[in-house]
Image 1 (cartoon, one colour):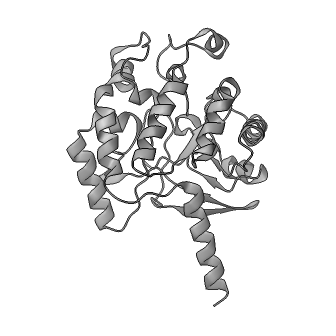
Image 2: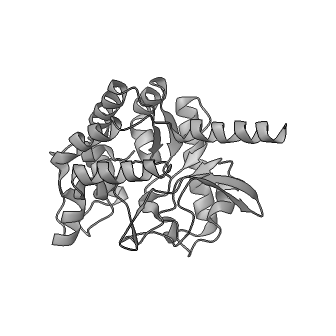
Image 3: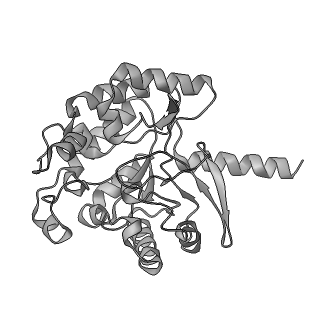
Length: 277
């Protein structure tokens, strides 16, 4: 959960020192998303940026009050591959404590800004486990402009390190002509037509695969302020904003949904059942 000025594209996008002077849209846009989710009786996992939580603590409380899970998106939208291990660990600790103090619930999950977990951060999962996280959703198993990592594990799974284990919810991709492509969130949700998104989701469901969807509050707001960018970055940031609400509603009609916290709880209960015979 982030604001329109937390987009990562373009040299003219405001920097951290400028954020406080900008008008905010995240409160209004998140309320719209919460109302739509309530309409379809869906409970989500909200990966909340620490900056947004500090500026809008009542919004974080409202998310929790309405039955959605609050998880961490880091403090200030800095990419993992731009941080040293100890800086990343501090970011994890600070954001987790901030969110827990605001909403009163334990924060179990993390998603890196820009899906910026890559091979350049081999300590990534160790630091998450060290700081008390139970799950992550940063693995983007396909090529992208920022982040992305090569893997053959496309479904939710345990990751084991010397520090213990943590559950991973990779971003869902679908194979198309030998390439893995995401259809189900962010710029991909805006770019691809509704019929194609629904078709690919149904294809994965027939294969008994879960589909993880994601959306930013700014994407439900076609009139949000825009920044000067080159043609490619402008396209990536702003293409088809007017189509997002209709696509979201079509997705919410497809099947039953579960958030990350409840899915992981089911996994652990099944493990306990199997262990007890």
